[in-house]
Picture: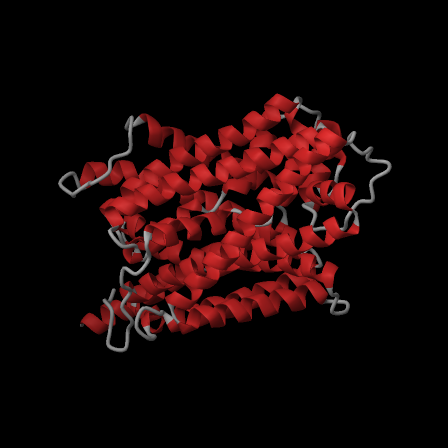
Length: 461
């Protein structure tokens, strides 16, 4: 192991409470909320159950956020979960997590979001046979470049995009509610389905499952709530972090839950549960039914904005854990280098890997689905370990200053770990070759760990 060397950058607390809330909201509200309501409706068995599922998703996210709030405020560090795992389980597990996050979890998420952006942008202006992939590449290059300038540029872009995103969801919800009061719901047979990104593999499995499958319904709900944990990676850059990290998580999850409930209530009112379940692009169908082609164009623009917002925030937080890896392991020292408050090399390395994954998704011709499969098992495995680390650190580091302690310990973190374990099982059950590829890349970290330890021991002698 090795600490930061000369030429390494320093990350300073420059994010306000508002900036942090905007960052989290922008991360979570991606394209998922425009895709998953139909899958939730197909497995809910009733309108009330469907709406309660979104409320339950917010409650589960809050449980996880309370656990992360204790970790992030006790150990503010740009490595986030990497740092917690290192303190709880040692260098080997931390290294494997940071390697997997750099090569699978975060870069796969960036590529996934980029494909969604490409699919929707192609509805507005198609760029040939590989239009989605071309747009995906452009998105990664542009937002990586934006983050290379400095944190302020990325922060302002995030504020603008997130504001437009939230405003768009409010407009869609308002249109749905007004439409539900002034017009009868449109029959699926009369509705022109709008071409959108489809969770093809999961949709096929859903069609074979009768309504009332609560477990599968919650898989979709929790997928849509994913991303709030990224707050831990900017904990060292939040002003008055010990106080504002907790507040930002509470505020952001409250805002997200409210928006999700409002949007789904408007969908249920306007289309009905059966029509929602049969729709391939439920929000687009609502807007087309209410406003015609203008509504379809609006929803394409809104999803493009939502994905750009998530891409920008995911690139920003992903580079922080890469930077932390470089600070601690000689093999990746170059990742620490850059300008003040900007981990330049960490951003470039992340961008290159994400572009390679876009190529993989293009070759398989199932870009979005491949990236979902690729990232899910590894994500939930290390998410589970992060929850377990809370117990370990309470035991091994009892004297640490804990300005915030998770309420109802140990019940709350036990619930969180149980949810993670269930999601890990579900992700392994529903992923194909993409999931296997992700596990293989994770295991490639083992020889890299051995090499890094050998370099470290040679340097010390």
